[in-house]
Amino acid sequence: MEKLSNNLKELRKNASLTQADLAAAIGVSRKTINTIENRVFVPSTILALKLAIVLHCSVHEIFELESD
Amino acid sequence: MNFVLLSRLRLVSFLLAGFTCLIYAVLALLFDRPDPVPFWVPGVVGALTGLFGLITGVFLPRVSNVVWDELSRREWGASLQFGYWMALALYPLAGALLYADVFAWPTLFAAMGTLTGAAPLLCFAWLDTRGA
Image (cartoon, rainbow over all chains, first blue to last red; front, side, top):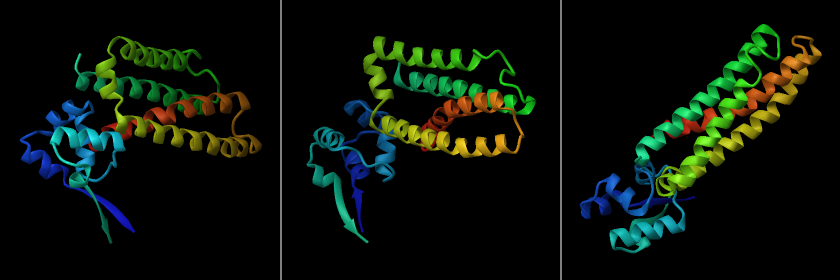
């Protein structure tokens, strides 16, 4: 089965943003960012696109499918 | 008001309403009477919780949108699912207790109603605090 992994933490740190900064930039709570980074919560396409815009990258750079 | 404060106030209001309903149900079963405290208490606390959400949504839309973001809405959906199954599970349980003549039906009716109200509120409070 395929799993969704993400590089959000690395990309956020590369952009010198805290979880709170990123959360404020896309209008969600810090917990939402934290749960995405920890792969607890899979965001919607809209939220994924907002993340990509703020981090100046494509959605594919943030999220990727990985097989078991 | 910032979203951290509003998020905490929401949690407190949900805990208050949830525990009011839960305690009402426990007291009803403990004393085997449908009104262990004035019957309007759970309803008023629940209505005030709803009013708080409505007022903050109307007057603080930007902050409220952050507090009720995608994750929160999903957690609320999961809480409602839990409340639905809890409400369904209470019917056979109450039926069995009624059949065994453990409680009178007015007591069970009051307990079922308040437990049905408490379930999604307390489930959401638990989900909200998890991983915060």
